[in-house]
Length: 272
Image (tube, rainbow, N blue to C red; front, side):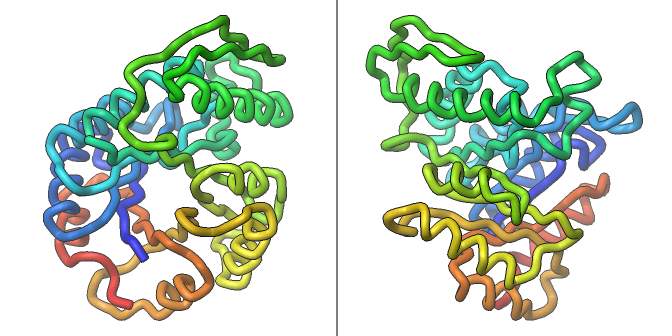
């Protein structure tokens, strides 16, 4: 099991400098990952840091900890821009970047407030086309694509990311809707969410078993569980989730108080 920070990009009053300080503290305390949400607009009262610029600063100030977005609503982004940004961040971090993607089902403001299409079917189509484009551009080979929403005419995209065969892609999905989990099975990890407030371990077991049926192997495939702990107690359910096939635990952080979060990460990952 690996352990990461899962922080809203409207936490810490949206101050990118504080995100960098927290990531440095997490690396020093032995955490394995630092993952930022990717909202563009969550309401007029929210102060929001751009995760891409912030993660670039974190990549430059850390050496070991894995970084990434969880999750980027890929259908509201131009795939060629994401491909360039991710390749750059992967090079800057020397191969430590993970891209989390999804429809942005809980991020309607990111779409509707800016006149973007909120139709879920259209978003799913753009997500799948964008994923195909990311793989094609990251190959470093001549690439042409013709889809319903995007087209690319004979482009060779360089430099390639450091990681091979690609930067790891985690796909978010709301269980028990099956389509996102079939999509995730084609890539490198799944970030399960639930229609209920919290997912049960039984639901995580169902997710793992479903993904297994759509992959040749679960080797090098990540399953992410989230939660909140104090750092002072043993957390048996994390151990139980690992036995089910979960590979990452991420600690949810949404508060504005940097000192509170640094105190938590300084205690280290949960004891299991």
